[in-house]
Image (cartoon, rainbow, N blue to C red; front, side, top):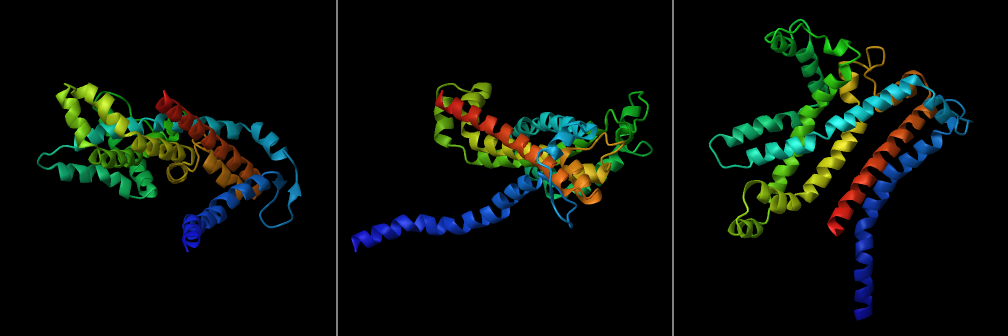
Length: 291
């Protein structure tokens, strides 16, 4: 009986994990493998697949529009990294007991709960050169109105600013959750040792917020690299493709140009970018914990 009970205990974790592993394999692993496989074919989505080997990748790296989208994704990645530290600062500010703080929290939560399409529409109105609040504001300082979404030099940064609004709110929520789960004994011990302000934050609070920081950075990286909704809503990749990103470029090639294999090649490059960045961050994080 004891041997039977031990065998049951050994198989129980596998039995509980099996449904999740099967679903993850079917809906995540299989589509990734299929996408990589399709990237070696020329296919319009309906007819016969023609094997072209690395032909899609060779054409991709010679495509100026690809490099424009690639550079824009790098901009997204760099500026989106502002979301975790700003979210942390807002969480520290909101994690106080004072009158009206719940209302203030609700105002900061608001961008997180609304659709990305709505965010795109709001910022399109905000940037409008005729009646937008952005231009009304800069006119107060003597500047001429700027058509943000029509200027190839600034359009990408305008869309990134729109994307940062809800992303900062998301990071703030993660850090607020982490701050509510801090170990009070460690904080009290640090206070007795004379740790306040920056010392308290650096040596006591931030180490306990590492799980929240990890999730915030990973989600922010994924959000930056798969940016699509705001680009589609605000500019459709324009003007002249200057605001396009890899996700939108993939969508254009696959849906409108009927080049599914080429779109799969773009998706594979995007997936590799995401994996490399997250793997590097994990390596740095594990290295710092061992030090």
